[in-house]
Image (cartoon, rainbow, N blue to C red):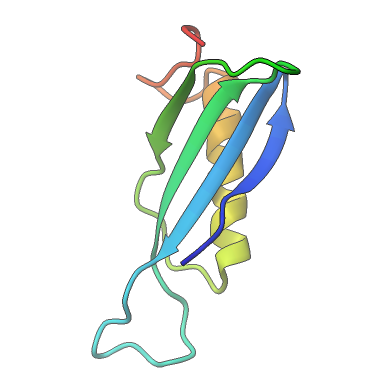
Length: 93
């Protein structure tokens, strides 16, 4: 089980959870793995609990480590905040 990692970017809080998929039969034990990555974005506000939105990160190439998968999640959340991902927005937060 992975633990969420948090980051702050342009007034938003980003939480990332990278869930490692089970190894396929033909994959080596020490090879890169696929991860299901979910990011949660909310407005950063001291003392307030605000609205948040969850986004699934599109399928990625296998990652060597959970840290690399988490970084991909942070990059994706930042792209959403920067309005670089079609169909995804944080305008209602």
